[in-house]
Length: 380
Image 1 (cartoon, one colour):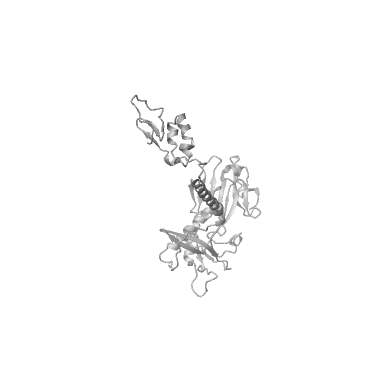
Image 2: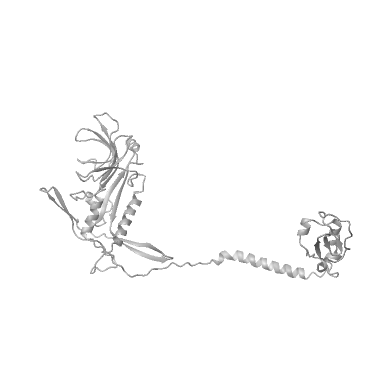
C-alpha cells in the first residue's frame, strides 16, 4: 500500500485523498481516506474508515497477487484478505493523514494433534502440533460466464485432502469435499469485501457489505465491528477458525470417532531438601537446648536455681504484700532443698481470707476486711 496521495476520480465529481492499493496503476483502490466534494465545496466529504479486500475477486474468482502476499505456501485457503482500518478507528485520524493499520489474514484447513485429558467431569484438550498443507497445487477455481442468463457458474475443482508426514497416501486423508469448500467460501463472500464509511465528520458510520454484488449491496448501522481498530483482528479470526472447527467435528454424518486414550493429570511434589536443611537444623538445636535445660535444672543440688511453681495470675491480679514477697524470696522457704523448697510452697485463694500462702498470711487489697478472727497462718 502506497503512501498518502491525492487522485481525481474519472467522473470528475471530486478528489479522493488517502492511502491507495496499487496507487500507480490505472485502477487504484482507496483503502483509507476521504473525498473532497468540489460541488458542495466541503473540506471533508465521505470518509472511508475500514475496508476488507479478499485477494480472490468475486464472481470471476481471479487471483490478486497470486492469491496471497505473505502466505503463498499455504494451499487451498478458505479466505485470504487484506483488512485496513484507520489508525484509531475514527474519522479524525483519517483527516490528520495518519498511517492506517493494514493486516493480511488467512483461514486455511489444517490437521491438529491433540492431547486429551479427563478429570472430575471436565474434558480438556491441548494442541501439541499443527500441520498445514504446503504442497503446490493448481489453482482450484473454475468459472464460466453465461451472458444469456447473466450468471457466472463457479466450481471448486478437487477435494481437500491433507496427509500428515506419518500417514500413508494409500488411505483417505483429512479434509472436505469440493462442494463443502465452495459453500464455505460463498459464506465469506457476504462480508469480504466490505467497508465502513461516514458521510461527513459528524455523521454516524455505516457498514457496507456484499460490495462484490451489483444488486445485493446492503448498508447497516453497527455498534461494534471487529475489523475496526483498535480491536484485535487476530483474536477474532481465531474465534472464527475455532467455530468452523467445532462445526466440522460435531457434524454427525461426516465425522469418524476414533478410540484413544484419555489421560488423567497427576500431581507430583518434588522436595528440595537443601532448602529444608536450615529450618530442620534450627528445630533440632531448639530441642537439644530444651532437653539440656531440663537436665541442668533437675540436678540443682545446691539450690542455686530457683523454681517458680505458682502461676503469675495471682500476682498480676492482686499482687502480694511486701513482707510476703520478702519471705517467699528467702532460701529457707523458696529455694532450700533441705526444707522441701518449692515442693512445700502452696498458694490458694480463699473466699473470705484472700491469698493463703504456706507459712504466710496474704490478703488481697481488694477484699473487704472483716472483724471476725481469721485462721492462723499455716499450711493450706
